[in-house]
Image (spheres, rainbow, N blue to C red):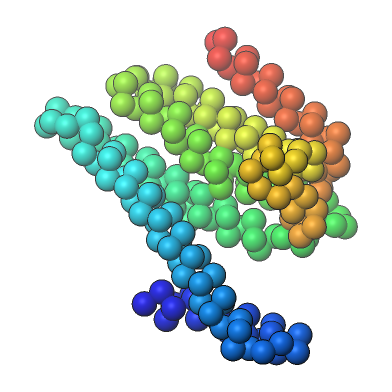
Length: 212
């Protein structure tokens, strides 16, 4: 089943690569199949974990008095990961990869929009969720939302800086990919020092919000 889905693309890619390199395609077909199956399993696990999180929100806290809050919690997180949130931000990110060079006018706002979505949107929802389930009043929930919004953006800007400055051991992934793919980030658009200043300003803003 997995080989009939995305896995077939990996088989075709490795076979074509082998032919282009003058290798025996048959030796690479099995490797492509294994890579494709591993990719599909990982993709399935990601989907399962996402829906599992929504299932937990739909079930807990249990009991009729919590029913309305459970519904609100599911709606909050579902919105955050939807095409209007994380998924939409990821699509926008991919669309603007390779466009960081040249005129920066308009790109700064687009970059912040991308960063406020993606993982940043999910982080914002996690902060808002705490206030929601604690039955905080509307004003407090709004304050938590603004705080979470800043956390989400700060996280993304810090990630931009780390990709340019850190190591694979620290990141848990290969650094330098943003520059190599000309990805739209604060570092590729404004430079490393400007990105650091933006990160520091966001961190200070978070501290000020926490003290209020």
